[in-house]
Image (cartoon, rainbow, N blue to C red):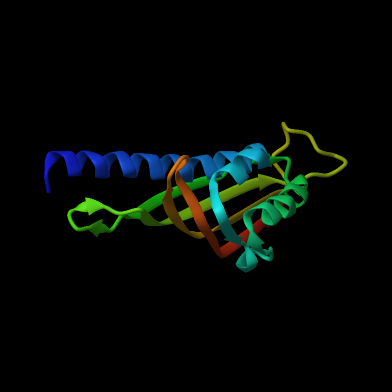
Length: 156
């Protein structure tokens, strides 16, 4: 590879990482406009393994907006990111795959809700599969997000 191709690959990896991080921040902050903006046209999300829905990103955002009201405090950690950016004839391609683990501690809402109190808490963990495409005007965007929840725990 040339230095130019190497630099382009590094820049793509940084941009892809920014989208994945933006995903976590949007969900934690309840910024459903930002969540929708992370997806390419036709992008889909699948939360069925966590008891959720699958469908177009806009519809899933509506579901998340309602569901996340149960958890007013969220801290979404996405770690161990494995980025696959295929080489296409010596240059980075326009599609990427990311596999990453997540740990998602949340504070359950209730009439007795007090941010200083640490229980009851709900923690879910598992793995994400992200598919991304380079778009002409918005850069890298999600085409698919799949949640593979592996475990959850409720503490009081």
